[in-house]
Amino acid sequence: MHSLPIFLDLTGRPVVLLGDGPAAAAKRRLIERAGGLPVDEADRAARIGFVALADDDDATAAAGRLRARGLLVNVADRPALCDFTLPAIVDRDPVLVAIGTAGRSAGLAKALRQRLEALLPAGLGALADALFAARGAIRARWDDADQRRRAIDAGLAEGGPLDPLAQQGGPGAIGGWLAGDDRPAPGGIVAIALRSADPDALTLAEARLLGQADRIYHRPGVPPVILDRARADAERLSCTAPPAAPGPGLSIDLSFA
Image (tube, rainbow, N blue to C red; front, side):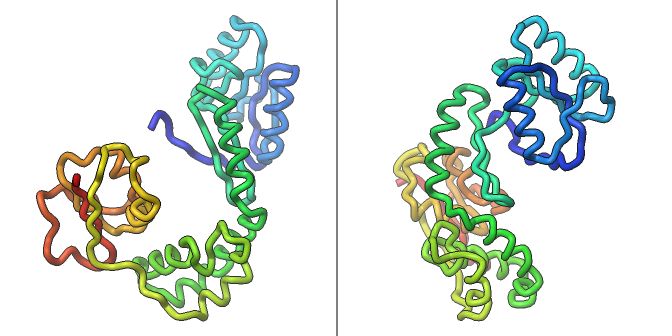
């Protein structure tokens, strides 16, 4: 992973913006859309800055001045000078999908954004708000954290009552999901025989199981790019064979075919 994706809360905060013309105007719109306050270089309270200057020497000098003050800097069209880059954004507020290419190709990021725009329903943000509003009821229904996570995973799974990509899924489905039968999430241990070290060779079902698993038992030769498809908090246990009793929840046994 070439960089760490983060989401910054800019509400009411000053953000240095240097430059004019179309590039600076685009950065201004983005800052203001995120609730930030575009300011000039004299504002000492700012912690990030955008440089949109046409001249290479002027842009390099401006970036150096801001960086010397401890600011994180983005320089338009000059990824080598950037501390951070701006992704293409799919906005379903409060759900945001950010697509970055480390400055390699804005066109590729744009093409991916346009594809995702067509996939993600307009009501996706309302579903996120409804889940947030229902967090007390969700905790009351499933007081154990692992149980709760599995129930949420099952509800949001493809074809589930809260499927975020289904038009019928949405805020109105929350009550029915909470009142419905508690369908058990997949448990036990599931073997996945890898056909390749390429993560794109995983089937959709295999990728979904990796994303749901509580722990991954894997042979030492399984590459990190495969293991990265699992949840970040799933245990990863290198072994020659999985244990007879893998523990509660879903375990995956990863090996090469």
